[in-house]
Image (tube, rainbow, N blue to C red; front, side, top):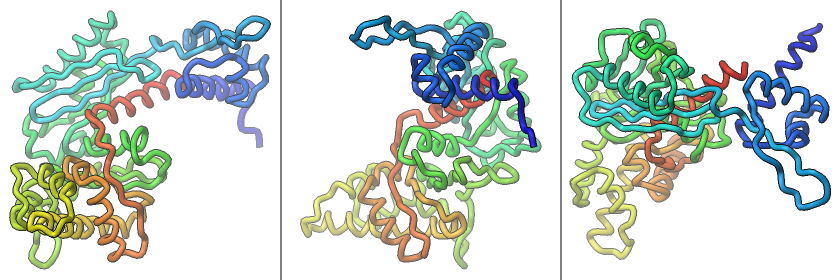
Length: 381
């Protein structure tokens, strides 16, 4: 059965070329031909076609030091498209505008936002567009990360009582109307796992479970290389789930309040949960009361984390479990090792457990990655 003619083949080759150039950077015609598996004349023709469409541009010449002319280099025309990635919290808006290659060309952080966060976000986007000499309508799309889950049917934000200004309306629709461009709203922890998947400890893994432990507790899931959101966008919203016959709230076991209380009860003194975990992981095992308290605290914390993970790990069978948020990052390899031991004693499927990379601005970076993928799908397609 015929599934495509010359026009479809050209489109496939054009798309493959643009993706290769966006991923690898400038390449010669010969390098591009080898990369996507076409002849050099075919590569020359598609580059001519893409330059005519203003999707690629020359980028100097390749220095080879031998006789003969240097090969011309080509790159994606980075100015052909721009997109926006945003991290929205209760107190701030962290925003970046990127070009078609994903390079950041504008960034700003607004703190102490007003009673109208959508107006604040619009002002930030307008400022960025003006700085780049662009109209807002020239931006391809925006991805906004927010704490909570968006129902794909209604656009309503749920599991977000701490963000009352964002409740009770179709958030993506209102943002799209305010900005004048397509807006996707994504759970912030989902964007953290995207950042780890693209740039951090989860690279090369297709099935990943990320446990976020901070002021709240949540999970993010990658199945088959894609974020799993669930039927109503609420996959991973485990913070308020009751466990055990006493109805203990899962999130209270490993959130910042619960972990700090556990540290105090174990004899580890600190003013913040992440500081308690970090101090315990760096304490020397010298037989003193302090080292004994640190070991006791970490062992109990690891057991709590393993108990939190046992059901999702049994259901999902991930290759990798990532301990994220301030608590997971503070625990480092030592806490991850203790969780590994405890978890592997509870389940037969034994995933690797690792601390998150903990990259600064991970939510915004994840939003940028998602926005770039959307923009490239639109423009390269």
